Image (cartoon, rainbow, N blue to C red; front, side):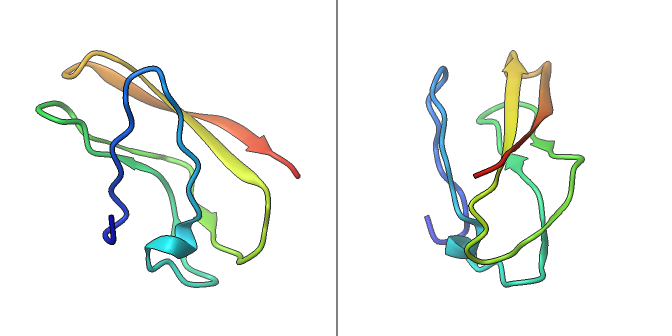
Length: 78
């Protein structure tokens, strides 16, 4: 989706390049979970976008629709 929204099915994972969603080199970015009919969450860890950086920030959302947690799991270095 052009606005950076992407559906992720429960139990699956997704990898995205922020540059594909109108994030520019040097912009600050994080993850945002728009939970359908539930409590949305924003990541508390902020990154500076660098094009062609192959490292990945890893997040997990868990819990229920109305009682969930979004956690930062660290960086996977390439």
